[in-house]
Length: 88
Image 1 (tube, rainbow, N blue to C red):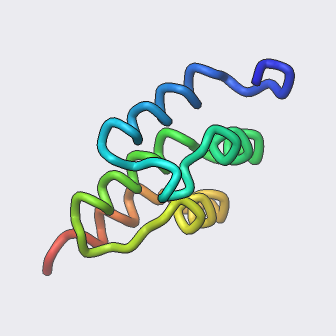
Image 2 (cartoon, rainbow, N blue to C red; image 1 turned 30 degrees about the vertical axis):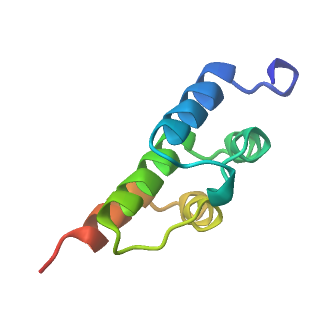
C-alpha cells in the first residue's frame, strides 16, 4: 500500500469497521477495491459510513460499486443516504 501512496490506516480501519457491522466481500468491500477508490480520489470513510447507514435503514439498496460511483461523481454519498432514509 505504501508504494502506491495509500494510507494503510484508512483502508484497514474502514475495512474492519465494515466487517464489524456485517459488511464484507459480498458487498464488494475488499482491500483492493478500497485501495482503488482511495487512489481515484474518493473518500473511503464516507463511502463505508454511507453503506452502513443504508443497510441500517433497510429501505435503500446501496452496494459498494454504486456508493463509489456516487462519491466519485462529486456528491456526498452519506448525505444522499441520510436524505433518502428520512420519511416525509
